[in-house]
Image 1 (cartoon, one colour):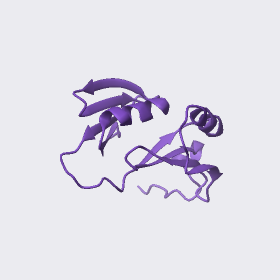
Image 2: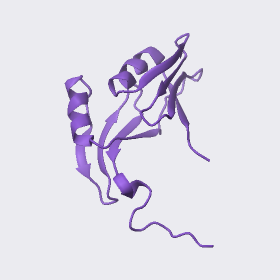
Image 3: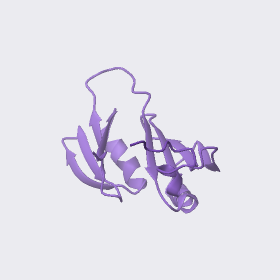
Image 4: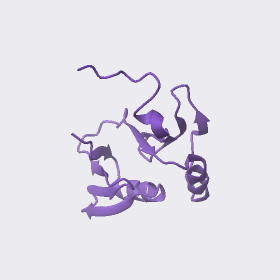
Length: 127
């Protein structure tokens, strides 16, 4: 089984479209300002949907991996994207930068290389 799509609830699909396009995602579907879908570089999809709920939207963490993290952060800053933290090496062997989208969803842009799937502490399969 492969994870192909993540969908998140947002207050405004049009303003969120602008934000995620700045991050480099390709907009492939946009219907009636209540739904949008993007294509990622790896071929997965990421969707935005409006919510009928009046409740605040919290708790989502979205991870986008890229091999050239530091350069990507500088590129995004030049487009006006604000970061909560600049790229930093983490104890779990990932390099991460943190930011938020217009609805406050926590976004991590990171580079993990081989450590994403095969960290030194990976559980070994038993047969």
